[in-house]
Image (tube, rainbow, N blue to C red; front, side, top):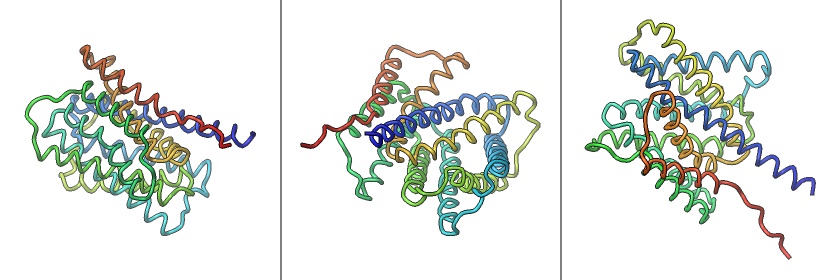
Length: 297
C-alpha cells in the first residue's frame, strides 16, 4: 500500500512539474515578439537567451552539485547530439516565421505529440485509445484556437515540419538513452548543444547585434531565466517521471497559455470559436491523468 501511495505521489509531482515547465515555455513567444518588435534581430535574441541560460545553469551546478558536471562519455555525446538536433529545430522555426503566419506555424507545430507517440511506438510502446482521443482533442482545439490564415508557403511548412521532427526526436532521445542521468546534467549538455548551433548560425548571419536597451535586456533575461533555464530543467525532470510521450501531449496547453499571455499583455482578442478551441485543449489536458486500473482477481 505504501509503495502504491508513493507511486501515485511520484506521478502527481511529475504532472505538476510538467505543467509548470509548460507554463514557463509558454511565455517565450509573447516576450520574444516584444523584443523583435523593439528592433532586435531574432538570431541575436536567440543567442542572448541561450548563452545567458547556459551560464546560469553552469553556475547553478558548480555551486550546488559540482559532481553533476561529469557524465559518461557516450551519454554525454548523446546529450550533446540531442541538443544539436533541438537547436536545429529552434533555427528552422524562426526561419519558418519569416514565411508563414504565426497561426499556421503554431498549428503545424502542435502536431509534435503525434510524432513523439509514433517514435515511441517504434520502440514498442502501446498507442492507447486515450492517447488518440487526447491527440484528436488537442489538435482540433489548436485548429479552432489558432485557425489558418492567408496563403500557405510550402517552404515554410517544410521548415516547421523539420522543427516538429527535431523537437520530437530530441524528447524521445532523452527518454530512450538518458533515463538514469540526473536532470541537471542532461539539461547542461543539451543546452551546450543548442547554444553551439545558435552561435554558429548567428556567426553565419554576420553576427547581427545592437544595444537592446533596458526593455530588450529585460526580455532576453526573462527568456533565459524563465523559458530556458527553469523550463528546460523542469522539462527533463518531468520526462524522467512521466516519459516524453506524456510530456509531449501537454503541447496544446502551451499553445493555449501563449494565447492567454498574448491576450493579457499584447492586447489580442479571441473569438467565440477560439475560446471553444481553448476548452478542447483543457479537456485534452484533463485526460492526461492516469487512472488506476482495477485490481486483478
